[in-house]
Length: 496
Image 1: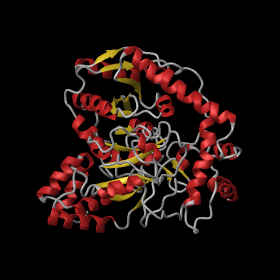
Image 2: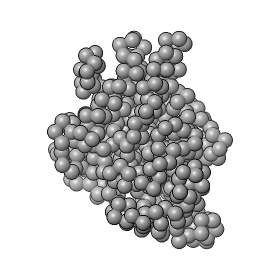
Image 3: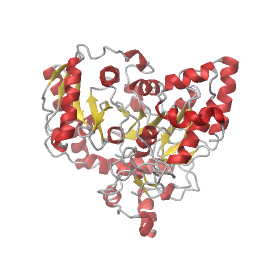
Image 4: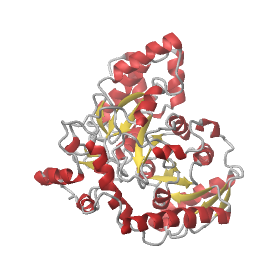
């Protein structure tokens, strides 16, 4: 970087700087939002395609510098809008922005699609003063395209790599680009989306904080969907404080998304729950079986150390609780039935320049250039197309009823009531499926690293709209342990 004032900051200060630190630097006049954008862009230029070739950022907002300059001028004239004023944030490539950027869900089928308007997420971020820096790569169609799709792969963007071990460690999916980018210091925050594990997986894999909110806390409008019942966006950051700041900017009620009308406390500030002694009196149950069996002995030891830290800092931890139905096979009929009508509804709203107007069109498009589009086949898309798209089938209705009963009433609600729990602890994203079915919130926090340097995440889950409890627990744990360390990025290219 040619700017003498900024060149030393890009690799030394920027990768670990928090939102509060960035905001303080702008308030003091040490840097401007424009300079901040330029620093992040320079870092992306050095490590996204060059060096380790993380491939986390898919597209840059061509107006980012101008937006930052305008926010700098606004700060001079009338002051800051709040904690996100001038802060660059990346969005997953399935979140609409009504500007010059594309929204493609990682698919070449939508590589020319430009949304007509902002998603609710993008609109709220802009209103808070954030600079939407660009779009992150992702697992194509949010990993609802085929069985055994590699995490982080898309036909439009290629393969995302994990900055802690490019080509060695799994990057997680499907918000892989968001997790990798935040870990690598390409932005202070990114927005991911989750249907089941798609925020928690890359957050734990890339040693960042990820919040998968209650379905309905954040509007789903303007996000390429998978599943009406489970989809949600959420923040991915390097600290719990930053995650709370971003989440607080995204919880406005949206009359165009009925799920947000179920939120009993819209617009609250989650930063008020950042209590250093937040673990005191919290009652946490550890769901070991079957989740701990997915870990190596070394990773299990890291989880045991996390449990010990919780106890040492005031939490009452039940060493083993059983989540009902956790070891049983869950069907995915609801996903296959809901994907077709939800995707078709989104595609019908795209412009005339996008020829793909239905799931059927998408399947046909992929088949025309199978060598490029079907590297890993499209079995899930084909299975979804077999259904009517009306959601009238008995199999769907019974499956949806069963999912809600087993995940909520007889599942998480039951075990938390029985043991009087504030939260349930699981490793990485292994326990994501049941809270995903319930639409309940979870948060992942860095829990340490193996001897090889592979990140391990500690995940807490609570009941609907109890994000405040999760943030309090996660912040208390984070402050007591401070496990996270930045990845060391090499200028030399690493072959995947």
